[in-house]
Length: 229
Length: 395
Image (cartoon, rainbow over all chains, first blue to last red; front, side, top):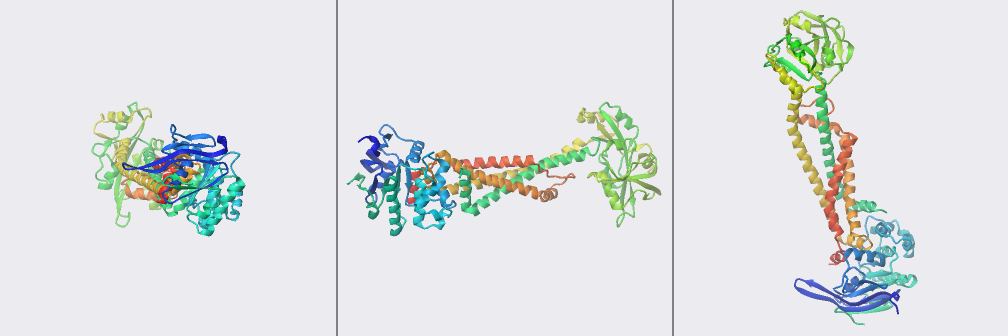
């Protein structure tokens, strides 16, 4: 199996937070490999380290130790740490993010929110048509609405569209249904699964919701900063 | 969608706050334009008034520097005289281009107003006075036909006040001399408007002051130094030399104190507006902490975020500046009335001169203030790390 088969290879990821003079370990040497097009759910109790791990895998944070390879390219290792600017460059070319809160700009329309990433960066020739994504997500009639006029499920779908517009290799979803009722959660789960199955998008999902986790091809459980299964 | 459109829409989020900040900037811009306009307009108007007098130096009898003021305070009794040959003495100086002799005379007129008043006559030399003031234009008639005739040329306001037209007869009280109005001047905006001009010889004869003058107007050659000539003229016996440059400097120094005060107020207004901008943008950055983190996670580099926040400041300042400059154009008359009511002396003509160049300069100042005000909030925003901002929102 060569490196290109894997979207992501992490080895010995350790994260230690320092609070005053006390060191608090959040991750203890986590190693894992995720194939291209794989849908992986990270589950575990609060404080187990799942969000910390996904943040490091998603280049939102640096690890205290360990190494990370994205599509065969070493992102960081024991010898090399990334600056904030380097992290930003990797983030915008590799990842799409969705979070529990939608963080849509309230004065921009749905279409403008989805187009917003192009204001800063556009993957020429690869970037998707925002209107096409919105149609794919069932929001074709909401394009000119403001976020305040949408339901929670619709707002999260807009956030997903925004994450997809630059054609990311990996979608990182941290508790994407945390603010939604069970029906809307199911809807969002189906959207993510559809993106994985039809678009071949690699998905890293952090959730407490076991039903949602059940949609993933593989579930990784974390406890006390270590992988359980 | 470009970064300025995003910035503009961000400002619409808190309309009242953005509106109040905009108003603060607009008021500062208004004050700035009006002040700069006043600075230019006042000096221009003063220079124009002084240039319109036609001569830069007035030679009077010692102890009687201001003939008009003396007349106002003492009627016709306090004037002092110099002898007419002094005109030739003055002309001997090579720096002197031309001179004009004048004799001011005043008399109580019981028919003037409700309880009588002083009427003043300025005796002028028909050969030299019109040359000294070539800008004087006539509404009716022209200068005197006879250098010793009983004729009068009436200033615009004097003619309006007494309803005089050419051909009218004017009686000099007590002297039983009738003057015929041969000319009525157009408005000049100077003291000439209220003057009754009579041939010098006639005034000397009627008021029994033959060979006497109250003043000699002296025009200095352009290349000469007025201060040096002024000093030389003091060599003449029993004269006082009043330079209009001195008068101008005295007035300007009086005004400069007022101007300094107004400039200080303007500076404070600009500083307050600047703090308002910093406060508004900084609050907006703190409120959007998580959102800015997300913007960075969707591809914005720190410099992009810096530009976005800076653009918000620039938009506020541009709109506020434009509004303030608009105010200053629309309300310039009110500003002028306010300034006139505050200052002890104001020249005639427009006091506040607002030009496109001045508007541009003010806009540049406001924009400069905006750029500086936006630096700190923009720098703070650019330093936000996505993970920290998302975490802080979750806490």
